[in-house]
Length: 437
Ligand SMILES: Nc1nc2c(c(=O)[nH]1)N[C@H]1C(S)=C(S)[C@@H](COP(=O)(O)O)O[C@H]1N2
Ligand SMILES: [Mo]
Image (cartoon, rainbow, N blue to C red; front, side, top):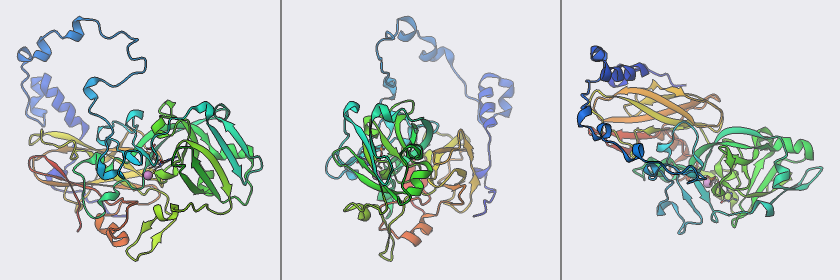
């Protein structure tokens, strides 16, 4: 593994959370101002209408508690939405994708209304009473389950990301989007509730010859994918719960397959059939579709796990540093994830990958889940090339764009995990760039 040099430049100096508290103290207790890393700010309470004026919400009744019996976010947050661009649509909005605003996410859970949504035939609106799951093929007891019957199996809840393997795929040849939402928003992370397929199979009896599982959806695209049995018996789930409520239609209501850490397209939504077989079912274009093309012209076919990856979410083109002043202490934050294990650490570079310092991981650090990282930084108003590089407990480390290109060329669509870089200008604007050296 690459050695992390403790950098000497001032911009790489480590600041701590305590620096924030000193700053806060400086506002209120003037004696502590000397300890502040920031110039104390004078607050003119008497001039500030937000402090001195009565507000309508403080003098009249609010909405009745019965107003939004299913709640919605504050009207002041309505700009936080999924987004689509024609560049990512194949001519219509049915076989298309709505990208997650990952820069707006807090912690590691994506709210259900913001979870990225990718479908090949539109969002099916399924009546659960008319939906069945058929499990057949190489099992002792093939059966058809109603949704109520399926939910009788003992359930588990697990936090996992889903990432389309095409996430970042338009940028193999160079940056395309001045936006993190479009550059990296084909992923989200949720707490899923459902049943392990291995637990259902204890009941149904898997025949020893079974090597593959075909999963098929009930939507208009009837998407079918085959998955190796080892992964199925490891941690694949059939899920009906998403962050404490039923799956959203966009995520495959009433049930979907969850194949933790592996390509999002394997997580068949609106799931209605599982068939166990000794050979993979090579549905027509399936093999051609999700392969990785190498410069030699050879394609890697069985390429399932999403590799270790990370992205700085603040700052980013969508959240620039234009409001910062020289000397301000600011928190750099981002997300790291690996489909092959648990995030071990994340390093940050301010000079396009020449020197690295270690960020801290914050909150829950779970296998095959988004992991949030943080670095407290003193802003100097100098141009930066800001990058993050994640490592996982399986020993993988994110490659540079150069290393990735050496192996994969630039003709691929899928599985791009080269180190991402934001260029921060003197004015604090943030541009999407790639470091090729
Ligand atoms: N039945 C069905 N399942 C599907 C799809 C689909 O079009 N139909 N799209 C797949 C793709 S390509 C991805 S990346 C994920 C996206 O899951 P999400 O829409 O919940 O984010 O679902 C997969 N499951
Ligand atoms: Mo996908």
